[in-house]
Image (cartoon, rainbow, N blue to C red; front, side, top):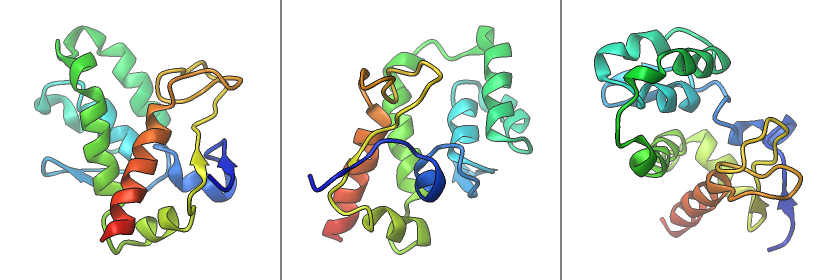
Length: 143
């Protein structure tokens, strides 16, 4: 790898799930991939709560609705995120072009809010979001 992008802020903010861009998931339009991800935790009839709010608000709403969360969430969440990343970075789109311009950089969702599953905190974590973004970049580069 040539270098590392270790925070999805500033110029690289488009890599964040909080980046504002329309995501149409299962026929419903969301203002970010974070909104769609949070909605996917719950029955589809609740998704309206996630369609007209900020990404941060969608995350807060999700925490308040925890009792309605689908039972298989931990088993399916990575696959759902993979689907959302494919939608966000559709081949030929502006965002796909930006992702491709990251070249062969290691993508690390560095954060200070304690998420060691999707990212890394002080260099420690699984970085599933970064891995999925690099996977998508590889797919796009082969098209």
